[in-house]
Structures are given as structure tokens and as C-alpha cells.
Image (cartoon, rainbow, N blue to C red; front, side, top):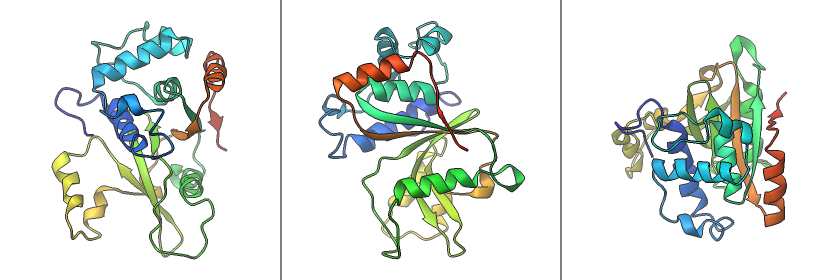
Length: 231
């Protein structure tokens, strides 16, 4: 799901939600709870869903910031709105705030290590390619958001994120669907430690399904929004 002419410059949060929802709706763990969203909603529908979550009592501070209204606007959304939306859909989520650099030159190696442990918690020597049922991760920084779909460990033991960027033209991404691709094609996806140098990054992860009681607890907790700070 990539930005189109109509949402270029402001629609990345919505496009990343569409990517995340597309993956979740095909995952056996989440399929039942998301059965009403087998057809991925358009941006106006997503805006309406966030407004419904606010009306239900989620994140009153965020609702106030947007005056309770997103439909018909070009308002940016970020990690908090993605968290609210997913929790409203009864999905168990976390927001992680990598609030300062943890490496030289303003880099964030701790973020890369966290993503590695998320996708490969018990990784020992084994197959070179591991397919996991873990959902993609929503990645937010100032001015833009993207979707982390995987991670590579290089020969020198450094990490490389595999990222879907809604700002990348569809025709370029479609090259990855060819039968034969090589390393140069993967440059579209690969992001090394040295290429993530924003001051702060936030991740939103999905880690299960909520019961109605758990959803109520999450709604009450969202009245004072806090993220898990790392480090």
C-alpha cells in the first residue's frame, strides 16, 4: 500500500496501517477477530474508525488534539493513533519509544537489536532464511512512518532492517515479485544502522488478541498515554 497523488505527503500512517492489517488478516492468530476487515479499508474509513475509537473513550488527549475529527482532513496520524486503532479492534499492542540515540553518530543500534529479538527470539545456528508468523512492526519518526517486515544479520554480525516504505513507487516494489531477484533489488528494502539517524523512533507491535475485559482496561489506561522508553 503506497501513497497516491491524493495522500502524498500526509497519508503514510494510514498506508502503514493498511499494510499491517493486510498481514494480520491473513494470520491464523488474528483472522477471527479481524473477519470484518477482510477487505482493507480506505483512508476515509480508517479515519472514521479512529473517530469511533475516540468516541468509545480511547485516548481523550489525542481526540482533543484533533478536535475529535479526522474525516475530510489531511491530518497526519502517528504511533498513538495506530495503537488506539489496533486496540479498538481488540488487538494487544505495545508502543516502544527509542527516545535517544544509543550509538555513535546519532544511531540507534538498540532499536535494531530489539527488532532482531522480536523476530528471532530463540535464534541459534540454523537455516539462513527464517519465516516467522510475527506481525510486521509499525515504525514512526518525525515526519514519516514505515513498516518493518523483517531483519537480516550480516556476515559481520551487524543488522539490516527490511522495510516497506509507502513513499516508494509501486512500480519499483513490483520488481520484487519477479521470479529472479538479486541483492541490488533488495536495496529498496534494506536500511542499515547508519541510515536511521532521527532523534527519536517509536515502534508499535501487535502481540495477541484482547478479551473484552482487557480491552476495557486498555481503554482506561489510554487516558494517560505512556510508551515504554528504551533505554
